[in-house]
Amino acid sequence: CKDVGILAMDMYFPPTCVQQEALEVHDGASKGKYTIGLGQDCMAFCSEVEDVISMSLTVVKSLLEKYHIDPKLIGRLEVGSETVIDKSKSIKTWLMQIFEESGNTDIEGVDSSNACYGGTAALLNCVNWVESRCWDGRYGLVVCTDSAVYAEGPARPTGGAAAIAMLIGPNAPISFESKYRASHMAHVYDFYKPDLASEYPVVDGKLSQTCYLMALDSCYRQYCAKYEKLVGEQFSISDADYCVFHSPYNKLVQKSFARLYFNDFMRNCSSVDNDAKEKLQPFANLTSEESYQSRDLEKGSQQLAKHLYDIKVQPSTLLPKQIGNMYTASLYAALASVIYNKHASLNGQRIVMFSYGSGLTSTMFSFKLNEGQHPFSLTNIASVLDVAAKLESRHVTSPEKFIDTLKLMEHRYGAKDFETSKDISLLPPGTFYLTKVDSMYRRFYEKK
Ligand code: ACO
Image (cartoon, rainbow, N blue to C red; front, side, top):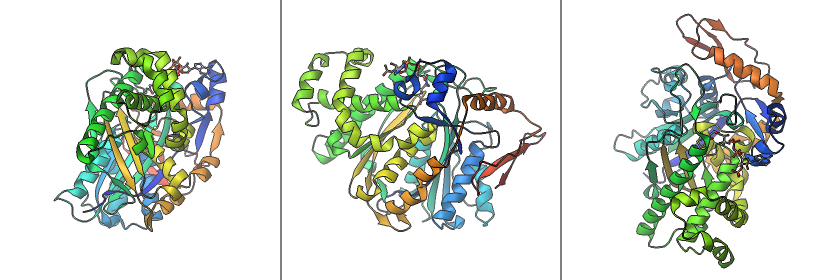
């Protein structure tokens, strides 16, 4: 079948957030450290009545309703998440409640997990299924759901939370260019979760940045090589209308795009003008290790790429800057931002995507866009996403309240035999929420 890809999208994020500016003051950080230094505006977080299961129940139910999809028409359901609530029972099985109601239990797929990459693994699985001989003509459904929380310290402002659902099938307005997929996978300890009693990761922040950029370089080189072999022309960032990156925090996205620009310079591409070539010349002979450490190269290339960043990257940064790192959902929230901001002018355009999960796994791939047909049209996806209204209706809480919630959740993580406050006053109608965990660790949810 033709043009397999994303037919429909929906997104849910908690209605509570904390402002990075207020967090700077609260943490005693220098002014601008989180807003300019990390490039973040706000951070969403789950209150004690929400978690990755409730968010994914909410977003799946909402997608099926808003696009009028009969639950019987789903043949594969894949979840990407790195937020472990149960080491055996997949989040997918909780979502089956929605499908069991309509008598559909014939749905393949379970959860994929490797840091922020699980959503991409889930997406590729669904796309491969639709393109395979096992496909039975029904839709695939991908859910990315995470709550990113860090221990007190420099990583804490890079948290976030959200769930995204994507319907997969042929003749999609956001279709995969399957031939140009490139991955880079390796063994490193940059960010991992070895302490099973804690929700917080162990993270080597600096190493994770370098690993991210090295993986980006490797994927881009191979993506370009595959493109050039098939098309017979050089690929450069001029061939991408938008570049969408996994976004732990916005500064890393700025650095990433500058890195692609530097790659184009090293490959002598026409995307880099003569003036920029001259300015980058002093860095041409750095070893790759030196190039990751050079502050002058980092700052210089960011400045030189700025005019292209504003056009090709900035439209993808809306949700990640407002919500924070959503782990598996982060890359797809960035994609949703482009669709929301630019849906009227995307016909025929290409979006290059970069997915990174610590540990590490990474893939670069691309989409071709077309307006599509209602309800699976870019216009309708943008209207369902309804980003501005959802952001505006959020409730801003104080850093103190945010810290209190994290403290409470430290006790709740892995606990049994408790009831939540059931305070759902801030949740929009239709939102699922946690009511209790019984003495057998069984979790109970209700819908507002
Ligand atoms: N005004 C403006 N900028 C400032 C200010 C200020 N007052 N103070 C600091 N900065 C800048 C710094 O110059 C730096 O920017 P630069 O890198 O462009 O030079 C930036 O703010 C960050 O400051 P640092 O001191 O370098 O780093 P910090 O100790 O705050 O830690 C880090 C940042 C490493 C990102 C931390 O938040 C972290 O560990 N996060 C989690 C790991 C992560 O997200 N890794 C990314 C890939 S893996 C993943 O997705 C989970």
